[in-house]
Image (cartoon, rainbow, N blue to C red):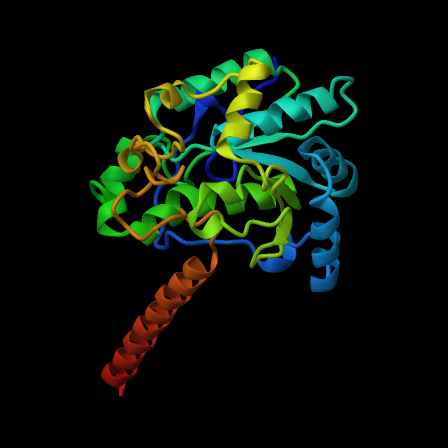
Length: 306
């Protein structure tokens, strides 16, 4: 059985040896774009051509293409149904161990217990899947995060919450693990901003994203899960279709979009892992405020010494 590594700062420990790192003056830190840019690049016209060609392939063929073409390829998962289908397909493509695709999970500290239990079932069913877990940089538990940032940060500062528990751990993982491309579970039928999900794209940081099941429906995914006896989150048997953090996930009603239970009643549809621009703007705003504070402090010192 593969070892499961949990990362929060720059140290690597097992899940039972998670280290605690004191909070710093700033909650923000990111790799420079040159540190995480892929080894290969695509022009817009090349991406368009690739999407046209990949649309003619089966999901398994898209996965095979990605595995044999893209360096530094990882599968990112939140233990959703689509990701489980991809994982099962990859396990079959990698039956002889010649095409491994490491699996990455971001533990936000607020996942349902059922989601965490699925991770154990994944290790049992897919022993060749090297599951790596990343947590927020400074905190190993929700209690530690709340002691530093207060209760219900997802309500008091939603953007900061998403950055601390999702975006920062993911970006740190990409840098430390040499991730150049990722397989995601996004599909057009999930609705919202995912309606136009391509098979391959490049995000604001230069990370290549492949969405092998982009054209699948929820029924397609569910049928595959059933036909191949793939393990899945048991919350789906309780009316959930898309599962995220427990505080922002609800069951969906018949006829609602698949992700209607995420951030119900709000305009928000993505947590930031697939929408970087607002976080970069937020970082720039905070940095500008910090610099203004420094300038003001320096001016006061000069005035006092004059």
